[in-house]
Image 1 (cartoon, chains in turn red, green):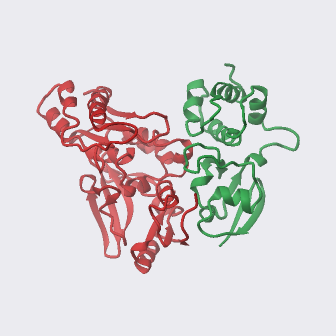
Image 2 (image 1 turned 45 degrees about the horizontal axis):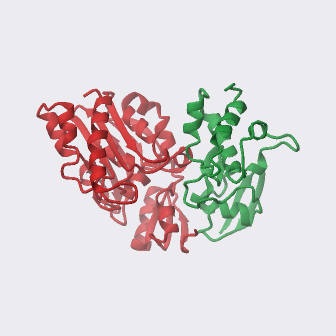
Image 3 (image 1 turned 30 degrees about the horizontal axis):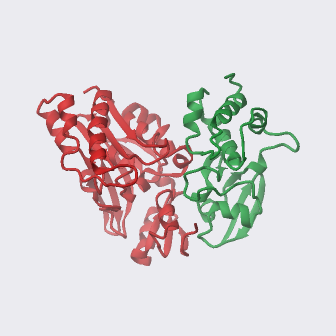
Length: 273
Length: 153
């Protein structure tokens, strides 16, 4: 499968990428690792006229401790998160989840920013950012703005990033408290049929679900039950409240709801709740 | 666009459309047909090559994206008539049946063995999760990888 024709430009900096997006309009798309965009283009679900390559920008590839949070450059590869000493020490849940994305080859190319702006409810990392209560730094022609992860995912494959903006950084709070990640699928490398991330932070226990709605979502009823002092088992039974799981060849809606409850219990147990 | 890459130690160039996938660039423009196209959807791993020493699926990269980079394919492993230790281990342990997944399996293995601190059967099975064998010959593939790493199974 070959994508439809397009023009290719390699940006020398983020600011140049923003200028190129402005110049080419909404038909231009950013390319980094290409592991979300190229599959869409092969299926002609996306037919951008111009690709602006930001995959080699060193200014977008880093993991560092900044003023109370851990900052990750948007073009940092999953492999670099998986092996990051900063993450291992300060946000081990994120290193762990990154190490479960796809397979080694995918992790050698795919980037956290690419995964996040793709906005696929079946992706693992967006759920991790929701559970952690992270935020996203977006830069456009008018400057930078910071969007909380809880306000970032607007619809199926739709995020708060405007066509002339670039996601530049992902911020997460440091936490070394227990965490849980459960991913249920048929083959190891597949997207999760359902997944659950549990992260304990200073703000409480965050619980987020993979593939249980048109966007990555928090399991709000479970979080509320935990805050109210419910047992782990009771809280897990509320995991599918307010969700709208898809139905496909892998699972019915009802089966996904069942998986969400069971996997949430297991993830809470791993997290030591 | 003119794309120049270092493939198996040799500079090679071709003028290609930006939409040319790396695997087709290698096979059709550079004539290196050892790398296979399997699923074409980054699932099966048959197209695995090393990019700057790390395994990647060449069906999910554009040739223009890797301009100037170093690529190693199955053709670049053996030293003359002497097989690479991973190739030799696959041969010795019958780590292939029809052979279609083999170039990808071998290249993924070369990358994996570079990365693993400790080579165990579990680590090999998990580390090769991105490569499918439709003959389902996994048992001997895992045996071959362990042998290549000098681990007795």
